[in-house]
Length: 282
Ligand SMILES: [Zn+2]
Image 1 (spheres, rainbow, N blue to C red):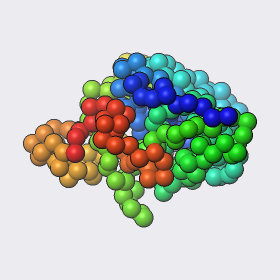
Image 2: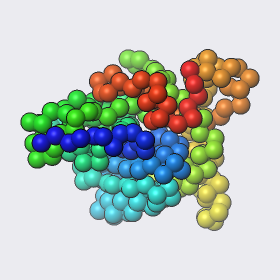
Image 3: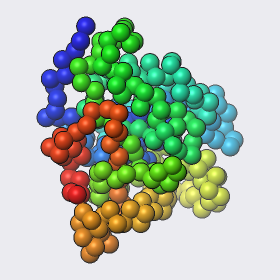
Image 4: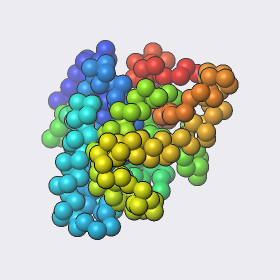
């Protein structure tokens, strides 16, 4: 049986497939926020259970904790956040993972899917990126994963921001200025308390700077996030200048940039504008 995807595309649906609880908002929280402000459906998925992300807590303690943190982060913008059960730090691009992703894309019927590039520092990110790439066309093939009806059209797939350079840097097909969404994304990230205020602070050797007071923590999370994403606009300044000119580019501090996958649906200019509202035009 084949489904009709005629719901396309006045109110596009966004599915973000990240490897860990917090990847989706860290990399694409600005776009996700913009979707929700336009009353569009957003679903965020962590393919792994997050059970490896701590220096003190046990995996058994972390799994429910991180599931709750992710749900809270999603609730900030009214997005669904689902955490799957594949073990954190152990993910491989297996048929099991690919089939699960094929089912997810077919059931949610997104117009846009965001994920990691298959070249990335983290093996779990690479595995998710590979599986999404491998699922991109297969979602339209009825005899693959026949328990879930195939789509007539594959969604657009795009890769989320990263700064890696080998074998090739991310190509900026789309750039968003996320200054307006930045505080909201910071709030989402601050929901991942076991990460931002504990594990990532421990890893970054800044645990002693994390405040006790809740209001101070929110401010601290904003500064932490700003420090981490400022390099994007610096790295891709030439691309920004080409779009908005140098005086405006200088003012842009926080961006999200996306590369459209060539293995899934290829959007024309009008669809691109619909899927990435208020992008900096090329
Ligand atoms: Zn991750």
